[in-house]
Amino acid sequence: MKIKPLATLLLALAAPASFAAMPADGWRFDFTAKPAPGYTAVQAGAAYDPVRGYGHELDNSAAKGAGVNADKGANGATATFFSADVPEGNVAVTVTLGPGTHTIKSEVRRLMLENVVVPAGQTVTRTFVVNTRTPQIAAANSMKPGVVNLKAPRETVQEAWNWDRRLTLEIHGGVDKVDIKPVQVPTIFLLGDSTVSDQPGEPYASWGQMLTRFFKPGVAVANHAQSGETFRDSLARRRIDKIVSQVRPGDVVVLQFGHNDQKQIKAGSGGPFTTYKAELRQHVEMVRAAGGLPVVVSSMERRRFDADGKPESTLADYAAAARQSAGELGVPYIDLNATSKVLYGALGVEGSKPAFATKDGQIDNTHHSNYGAYLLAKAVASGLRDAKLPVASQIVDGFAFDAARPDPFEKFAVPASPRYTNERPLGDEANR
Image (tube, rainbow, N blue to C red; front, side, top):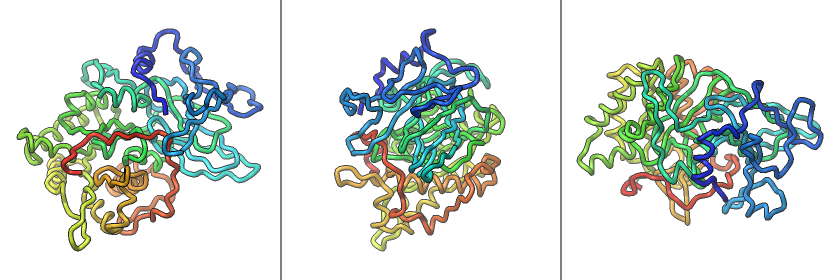
């Protein structure tokens, strides 16, 4: 699959005058053969044009010059990718769906709608909120202006859709109409490592990519996590600065680090009860000063079982340090470490394998599959609800989660994305 080269991303970020801007009343697109009045007709195979400001993200190698606007990945999955220029921030997206089964992801594989079934002869509308961003940091909430120090080529190529001036939808099943307009809603900011960040390609996924599925359009999820990183990296690359510059009262900032922080012990530059706690405190204080609500999450365990088939601990000290910090600082705490052990234990040695990414027959016991990420996202959403946070009022109706009785893998049916990668997420290979 083709991905945006660095030059294209930089051109989009520069936002010259030749780039289109979203109309004052938002975008209204019609993909049907007979466009409705007031809508912009979108032709199949019409490639994204920065002057026009919208269009399909085409893979010409898959289309073979036939004007097909569907991309096909190395894994055989197919989808349609459509983009439109939008201002940085939150946009409400309302889709009109015709007969069939529809799943929609946004930006870099964030699950928005899951298998919406529309009977023959009917249409259904659904609304969800997508957060978009650029690397620029505005002078707000005491933050100095600047830019996020993106990782190249990971964030400038594979994950460029998370940082450009456009909203990108990954459409499985098709859409009739798409309405897009800016919206002001509370935002849940995510900051963490590869188990949280938007993974660019199958077979890897994170709970941060799946969390969007479990919230109504009264809240947005902004995922600023990145593979291979720690609290220290967040400070150095100005990821927390970017978040703090955008935080408003009522926003939540979820903090989950631990996996990669263990590398600092090996390097002799810190530990869970010293530098880790100090850097966590610094993040909490920065978020609070901007009016946001910090939430500390302990890292989920790796897939490791003892001789009796019980999950083993590999991050116990970091989970303890996270719990201590939350108590000392008086902030909500989600014990994802403990919940993950219950979850893995319920799945069992063999049953837990589908919850982790498998590549070339080898299980990655740190990074998750779509199924595992989906379950952990439910665990985090449940934790937000148990903590009685206001944003939890926007969890979807009928939501339920019990780590001791996880949804069976056999009933998991979220379609895979055509975006596929041979590159393992950045992280600590020694603890694989």
